Length: 53
Image 1: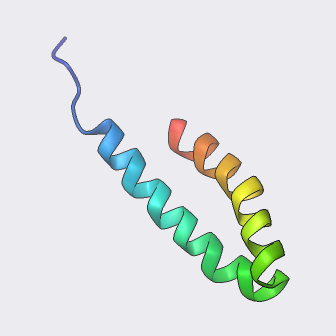
Image 2: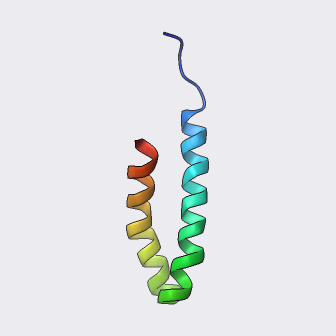
């Protein structure tokens, strides 16, 4: 079976897109400080679980 390349790049790109979307939608709702916290704690978990599937 040949080695698979590009998986980490695709996961990294997906993480950037999901994190940016999280910040765009969460920060205006919760404010700067709380929005960053919510996006980092909940958004990071969603990124990890979604992109590892």
